Image 1: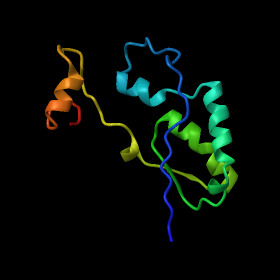
Image 2: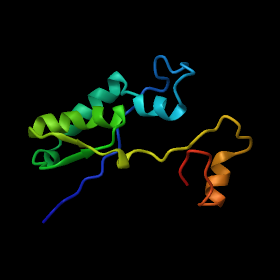
Image 3: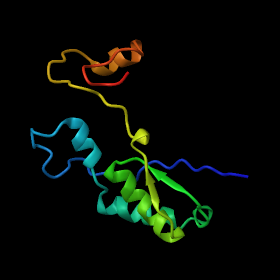
Image 4: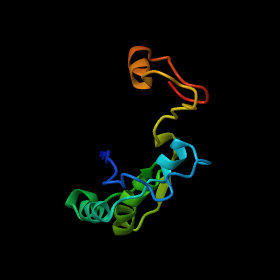
Length: 119
């Protein structure tokens, strides 16, 4: 029998240091967002749970906060993290010239997307 655990990342920083760098997209800033010190403690504690002591395979997105959460589970089980970009959040796209409520558009029209974004 195979058991699959889906684990959300631990507590991320609210404002990434250097996040005002205008040369980076909001998407890239989001991907680089790391865990808080408390988030690191929570991730470490999570990795000690009994059901996570016999993990054979571990997948994570390429987001810093998810890898930061998964690293303790990987270490405790002496396994590699398989990083899969498909597990990341959807790409919002270019919001530079967008006016209106993006999330309302996304909710009411599942095919709606911004340039270079995903629906």
